[in-house]
Each structure stands twice: as C-alpha cells, then as structure tokens.
Length: 275
Image (cartoon, rainbow, N blue to C red; front, top):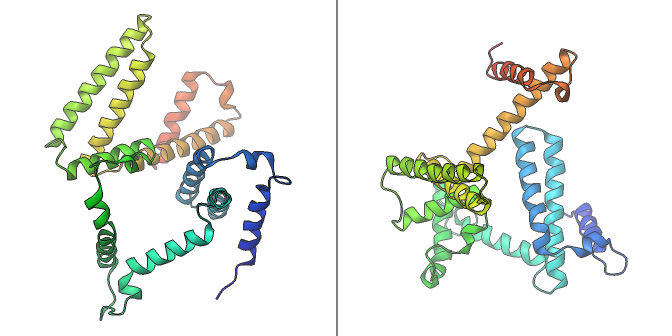
C-alpha cells in the first residue's frame, strides 16, 4: 500500500489549526456554512487555471480546494458526525460498485468504450437511487438548489422537463424571455421616476436570468459554461487591451472612455486573429 507522508502531515496541520487552545482564531471560528463561499471560490479558481492551461496554478488551486475539504472533514470529526476515513471508505465503495465492468466478477470479454462505460455507471447509479426515488415525496427537492445560480436553474429546468413541466418548443421559451425582459424594463423605468422598486428589480432580474437559463437548455447549451467562456473571453481581451496601452506608453486608468473603447476594439480584432 502506497503511503502519503505529506498528506498525513497536511491533515495534522489542519487539525492543529483547529486546536481549541493552540490553533488559529480564524480557523477556529469557521463552520460548514461560513466556509461554503470559500469552497465554491476555490473550485472556480481551479477551473480558471485549467482553462488557462496554467499547470502551477492548477496545482496550487487543487491544494486550496483540498484545504477546504480538510477543514470541513475536521469540523465534522470534531462534532462526531464523520471523518476523512469514513469519506474515503464511502467513496471507494461507491467507485467499486459503480465500476462493475472493472471490479466485478463477470468482466466484459472486450474493453468497453468510454460511452459504454458511462452507460454502465449510470445503470449502477440508477440501481442505487431506486429506493430513494420510490420514497421521494418532492418531485423537485432542495438538492437542485445546491449549485451556483445559473447551473441550479439549468438543472431545475432539466428536471422539470423530465416530469413534463416545460415549454413545448423554442419559440415559447423565446417569448417568455421577452416577457421577463419587458417586466424588468418596466421596473427600471419606475426606478428612473424615483420610485423605490429595488426589491422588484431584484425579483424581475432573477426571473429574467432563470428564463435565459431555460433558453440555453432548449438550445442544448449549459448556461454556466456559456457564461464562464464569456468571462474568459472578456478577461483575455482586457489583458490584450492593457498590453496595447502599455506598448503605447499609456496607462488604462488615465485614459478617457473614448480612448478605452478604441483600444478595446483593437484588442477584439487581435483576439479574433484580425490584426
């Protein structure tokens, strides 16, 4: 069995940080709930490092993500709920069970393709969840709320489609998007007139984003992926724009908006391969 001394040292370090007498006040103050935002942030930072193909960044962000996992497991261990060993055992058992085509007694005569392996995985997962589904009272339960906003809306929409509660065609979804946009614009006009409609704007903007998420689903696109790619595109263009300004001896913060727009258009052409 392979040993991981540095992993054991890391676990000991994290547990020491949570020591009631000698630990760090900040780490001791943390709870599962207070750490959630950090867990999500670290996961996204790893995604960015991966998409930028920054290997050192990937390694660092995985380390930060591992820290969050160890903090959660340490907190759970302190309260006697579960520990890292229980998590590892549960995961190993699940992987072995769902990879029947790898660990099972009756292995397939030929090596499965990736798509065939995924079908086997889904089949075993369905067996696991069969009892849960029979006992489930809510057709859409709170687990769908555990994802980032756009992804949560997307998954709620997918589930709604499965239980036959969805728009019949793309045109109907587009019409709904336009309807929500009109309602949002109406609230914005009210705000311009001096009315206090901030709560209404928040609600209508949320409805609009939810409906846009359903539009992306009907286009077979993941809204979270679409937005992430748009963010990355903006980031890269902005970097190019800053470099162009620096090459001309200028500084972004000292430029007026018209000059910034000109550099932005140049950056867009460069990013598209058009010099």
